[in-house]
Length: 282
Image 1 (cartoon, one colour):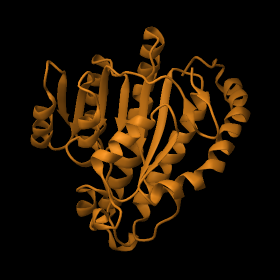
Image 2: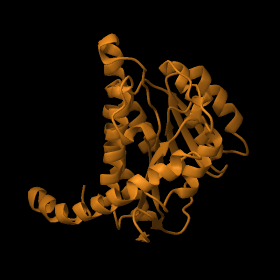
Image 3: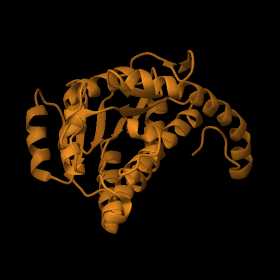
Image 4: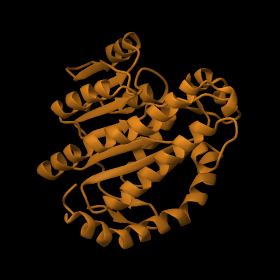
């Protein structure tokens, strides 16, 4: 059981995960998560770059550890289904939903396909993969008596509209709200839900997006962020990293997390009447 101590702070025994799926695992924070997980946790790593995935996997497949890679463009529904099928076959009990994209610039100056790609990956693929894999995560956790884990990687940009990074910030606000709502809906179920809101982090993402947040003062190391996120899983719903970002985000989030939990209690009976389903059904 997960109890709640304070607002948005879960207290549970530290789970061990047998098999993890990490999206966007070829570099940056996704690769850092793969490095940070214990060698006893098998890995299914997915990203678009097959060669980079193979290089990451080669450094992690030690001591008989299961490390599989699957190159996939998650904006494509058929590719997502391939990932879902393989993750289901491997019986994952930890899903790190990390893949993301974004580009800096004014909305009217960006190609339509650039904005569409951001929304397709950060919103559509994130929510679709989560919904598809969540029932299996819950079923396996209930069968084994262990806890499953779900980490949705959002961003500190999710806290407010961000001109010249509008689609990215809005997409990360979606993942933040979605993850908080999931945590409330799944309270009492054998799964730990975490929304990670990193501040500036030294990864290749900034270069691809058109700027370099990793050069900002106090920018965090990706391996440090991944370790902090894994250590907080099962203890906090929203996890913010960074010397300045962390305290700011957690101060802003605390009252809203309490409000979300209260809304969950109000909405639960309405949802049950609407669907005719019990608490133990999805």
